[in-house]
Amino acid sequence: MKYIDLLGYFAGILVVISLLPQVIKSWKTKLTRDISLMRYIVYAVGLVLWIVYALVVKNGPVAVMNSIGLIFALIILFLKLKYK
Amino acid sequence: MKYIDLLGYFAGILVVISLLPQVIKSWKTKLTRDISLMRYIVYAVGLVLWIVYALVVKNGPVAVMNSIGLIFALIILFLKLKYK
Image (cartoon, rainbow over the protein chains, first blue to last red):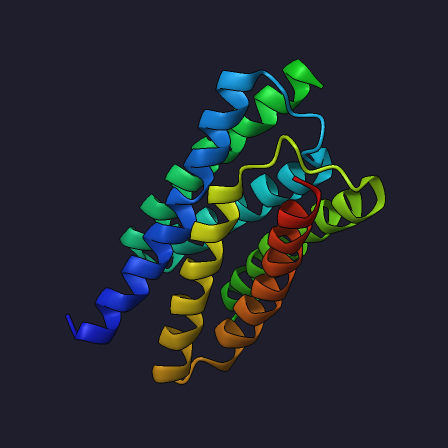
């Protein structure tokens, strides 16, 4: 693996991990008024398609990272629907 | 280009476009209370690194898509800081 690939993975991990503060905030405050429902619906659909793509082209890291991102996105979507 | 690549691009476009409803909602309502500041700071840093990665490996579509995503993310970050 080249150094530049490490940068790519690190960037991908940051993008996925960035969802966690939103999960924690929404979970703790039970407030999701200002969060766009449509944002997380379209996002979740996009991630599902991206996971399908990664599985077809056999890109394990991308499939795993997007799966973790999908879990976070679905939690936020659930909290949005619960506390809307 | 193979059909599966089209799926990859479509997924990427959905993920980026999904930020737009949040931009519009935050812009219109001027309310960003329930949005995590840390989420968009980490997200923006991740996207910047991803753009650097894409430029180094000369992946134009990924660089363009993440640049558009970064613009949306920075707008949301700006609105979060303005209306917090």
